Image (cartoon, rainbow, N blue to C red):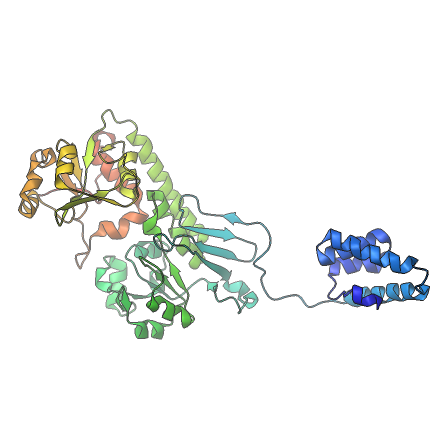
Length: 442
């Protein structure tokens, strides 16, 4: 009857050593019970009952002695060597995060594993993704019940956005890419060579994969891209045991925040140090460019964007592009507006504010003044047109016509910033040749 109040099993090794080596006194017993139940109040209550049984005159003394004998016996049995657990606990110890600027993901580093958290997989997401990344050396400790456990490094992946390509290549993992939707969109020379050799398979449209082809490739993971909640297509992939990790770098508010997503690929390829080193170099160059821009003697006004179906689309004041203009020490005309996306304005409101702008940086896919004039005669009303101060990001293209800016710029914001500084403050970078930003042809 007494033992029903003390259901002790699986006593921890550290406590049983105490019981084995010490006499079972009140304080030792209290410590033992408290650590077993992880509750000091409960431990005191059990001790109170134990003392009551020992002091109760109606309880035969031999029962108390019998209880102590059984407790010591259990303790000695527990002193025998116990098999060590093979599973990694995901609820222990402190961690450190390696992410500084990006808000859409995090990497928490524990002793035996890393936790990858995708906070913003798509706009206005209510739920986040979490994955446990376990090194191949510790793969025997993986918890098979955890569907989100991934053994790294990955050796076969499917990517879904051209912005993923530079991050994969910078880490020297282009040979790990085995599938991509609409491979014609890729401009990278390295990856185009792999496509021609058949090493990278075309898996169809980005919004409607050929899932039969994708599943036959058996990738270790799919690095997804989506505008909304997970689709039927991605759910099917996940149900077939292939992790789908959404890359939300395009949602980041700052240039360095976008570039930092290379650390996600670093974690997946088990190349965290390499990814950190690459990002640190980018960060340093970007910050150096900001300091150079602060030496400008004038602050020119900037306009951007283009008409689309009679509405002018341009970046809002808290956007990625607006931050670049700010860091280049220029006055972006809509820099004080709120929002991280685009503003949709009438032509009248744009001409009213931007007619006298010093520079027009980024005019859609137009690359010449003649093209722009043919597109809409109203474009000629801006001073930037008359003064031939229009520059484009769309001239530099890949083999199949893809604009390199869209593929490369997210990972190399320092080049974009230096380009803007060179155009708007040419005296500050006398020997620099712009990489993306080029002047309109006549």
